[in-house]
Length: 143
Image (tube, rainbow, N blue to C red; front, side, top):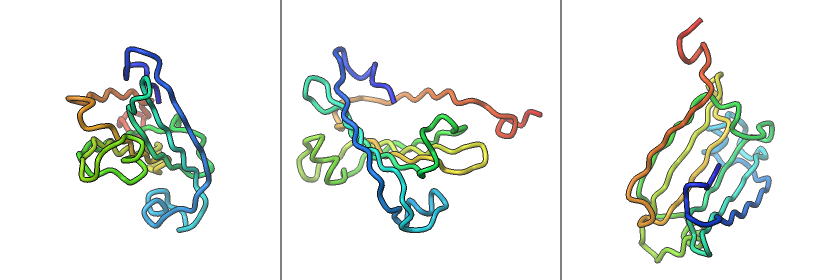
């Protein structure tokens, strides 16, 4: 993920990575048993100390990154943040945040990464997504 368009100054990025047991929801998404270890990456972005975003990203251990994805599904919504997202963003209890839920899917239809990204609700008026993913014959219908 890049943050070049997020701010006029240098954006500070902090990432932590850990292995966690797959919850029922994540196990179902990845097609793995509940409790199987998966990778959890927390990414925090700030501009001059002001939080821009925070994300929780999960992927199976055999997936290094999103580059094998052929499809990216994104759902944007206003919702109550998780406690850790609220703490990073500095929201007051009951405040909604803008959330982008992402699912990266490979050519076999396997979900290889999921991510929930939260932004302060007043940071952006709108989101524009432009995603170029490598097309494949299977997905485009070409032979």
